[in-house]
Amino acid sequence: MDALNNALHILKHESRMLKNVPRKTLEKLISNGDIIEYSSDSVILVQGEVNSNVYFILEGSVSVYSNKKFIVKLSRRGDVFGEMSIVSGNPCSATISTDSRLRALVIDAMDFDTAGDIRAEMYQLFSIILAEKLKDMNRRLEVLNQ
Image 1 (cartoon, rainbow, N blue to C red):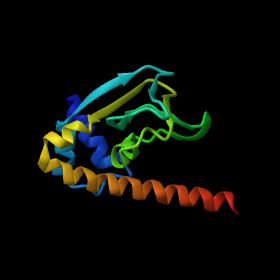
Image 2 (spheres, one colour):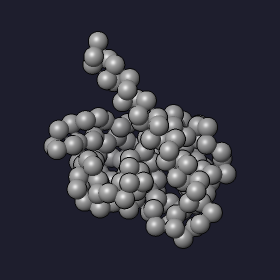
Image 3 (spheres, helix red, strand yellow):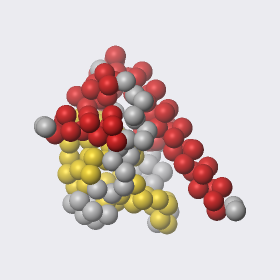
Image 4 (cartoon, rainbow, N blue to C red):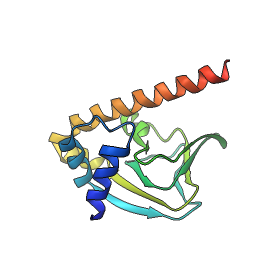
């Protein structure tokens, strides 16, 4: 299975956030991306800096830090980061660094502007991802408040 088909399989069948997204939408997404490998301890995004990419974890894990404090570890295949700054247009709200070797599907948001037919689908996809992240955060807060 080639790398892009493997990425499609992971996003469609293993991602908790993307499993209900139509295959055709995921194929468009993947066709606009590159699979990039990062070594352990690589800083991918820096809080306060501009970001133009969305990252889908295919293998490995990252840690999220805000104001140098650990927030959460993302390690599930299909987990996404970088989308919040794309949607908001604001600089990154967190620093993201790898915990291990990371293989990710990386999509430049500028490609959404040049591929007009995919732009609306991608923002719909981002709304699904952000809603899932909000649900996860609410569950974590409930546990902390018990």
